[in-house]
Image (cartoon, rainbow, N blue to C red):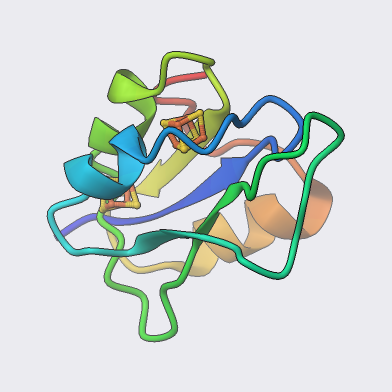
Length: 94
Ligand code: SF4
Ligand code: SF4
C-alpha cells in the first residue's frame, strides 16, 4: 500500500472540517492550540504511525485548496527525503 502524508497551509484553512470527515483513517483534526490570521483553528495531520495512504480525499474536498498531498508507492523513504527538502514526490492535489 502506498505511503503518504499531507501538508496543510494553515493560513488558507478556515476550519470547515470537511477534510476531517473525508479522511477514511481519521487522521485529520483541528488544532485547538493554534489560530491562523483569520481566527480559525486550522486542520492538522495526526499520523504518528504512518497510516496516511496519500489517497487525497482530504485535499479533494477542501474548498480552500489548503492541502497538498505527497505519495510514494513503496515504503516511505522517498516521502521522507522529499519533506526534508520541501519538494513533492508526487503532487496528487494542490
Ligand atoms: S491523504 Fe487520505 S489518508 Fe492521508 S490524511 Fe488525506 S484523506 Fe487521510
Ligand atoms: S477542508 Fe480545507 S479549509 Fe476545511 S478544515 Fe480542512 S484544510 Fe481547512
